[in-house]
Amino acid sequence: MNRKQLMAIIAIIIVGALFGAFVLFTGNSKLVEEEAGARSESSHEDEKGNAATEHKQEAAKKGLHGGQLYSKGNFDLEITLVEDAGEARFVVYLSRQGKPLPPTSAKISGTLSRPDGESQEIAFAPEEGALKSTTVIAEPYVFDAKITAQAGGESFVFSFSKEEGKVELTDAQINASGVTLQEAGSARIQSVLQLPGEIGFNEDSTAHVVSRVGGVVESVSASLGQIVKKGTVLAVISSTSLSEQRSELLAAQKRLEFARTTYAREKKLWEEKISAQQDYLEAQQQLREAEIAAQNARQKLAALGATTTGAGSLSRFEVRAPFDGAIVEKHVTLGETVKEDTNIFVLSDLSTVWANVIVPAKDIEKVRVGLTAVVTAASSESKATGKVSYVGSLIGEQTRSANARVVIQNPQMAWRPGLYVNVELVAEQSNVPVAVSAEAVQSINDKPVVFMRVPGGFVAQPVTIGRSDGKQVEIVKGLKPGVPYAAAGSFVIKAELGKGSAEHAH
Image (cartoon, rainbow, N blue to C red; front, side, top):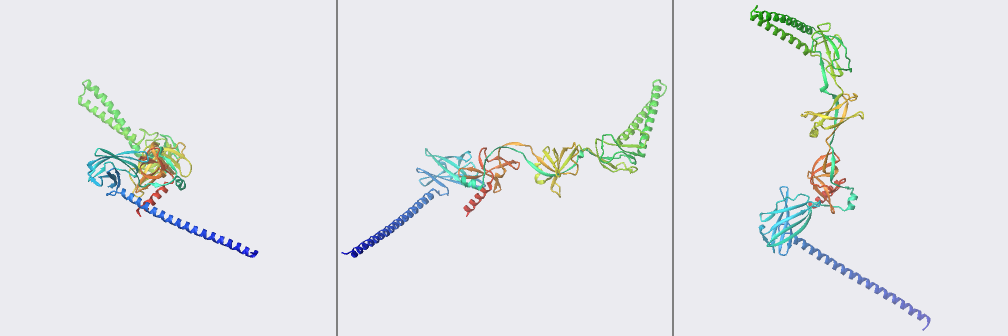
């Protein structure tokens, strides 16, 4: 065998070996694929079988009345949650070996545990072939329940849970959505109401000074804006009617003096048996009439604020300030003729002023006499504190608002009538045992709820709210202290709940 033949034989062997390896590898791959396919089909068949089994188990848990069916031995209990007229109650049906039992064949009681730790005892009473809870089951329907049945000398205990309306969110999802958690607890709540107002005169300390007598103005000593004391002469009026009244008083006084002299003489003569008693009694009567006439004349002058005798003239009448204050209006000039009811000055004590407040009808119940108010000038940073002294009982037909007033001190005369102000009414601060952040309160079906944190998510807890200061809201009923809830971002949970309800309805 020569060299060429040997090389040919070696080449044939190498090619045959490579071809055999290729065939072997290809056959194994196909076998692996076939085995994998067989296993996949087998696994698929197993999954279908498991799904069928689970479906059968689910179906087996449903009772004839659409409730959950629980069995212990040959004793069966089907329980449903039925709503009637807005109230939810448990309804229990009894059976043994698939045959219905009368509701009186067993005594049923239960215990319901809420996520916030609240426990509720549930009693049952026979009703229309079933046992119905005498206790209303309140929302949310998220709880653990334990039902105890005593029948035929045996005791059976059934436990189940319900999570209807729960919004499932993990801690990571909560952080990503921007929801913050807080705990319900005690708080100090202060109600604040912002209202517009205007500074006005304290009308209890403002007087319209009239002349009281008709006449001619002889002098005017008071000027507009002047601060005067009580009794200061503001103007002098010459009045003929006043002169006549003073003359009447003088005449009455003269007649009184004469009547007294006559009475004294007649009394002495009567006592000495010189004159008759009738003369004495007549003189006594004239004296009494003279006293009455003189007193009447003095009272007329006193009612006018005039002295009994004019200083230098019977016609002189002095108009005086009735109290300390400022002349805010002046309607009289020298030589002017005035009537007895002419308003010649307006005098006001500006040491206190009123902040007249406009209260919309929707806020009228929040404004009460005695509330503390902070008054701030609209054009400056001036502030003053006062008390609400009056709240109007009528609503304006055009404005649909009521009037209220706040009395504020004005020692420096900084609060001038006509100044626009903002009035912040502060209700009495009070401590409440349970309060939450105002942004935590949401509305579902026109009812306030707070999203309470439970394991694995949140539930909408119905609450009864009380006072609020815009930052915190009092919880009167529905939430215990220390319970965690969704504060900021609670609207995100409400949106998730809405999506879940829509998907469930679909």
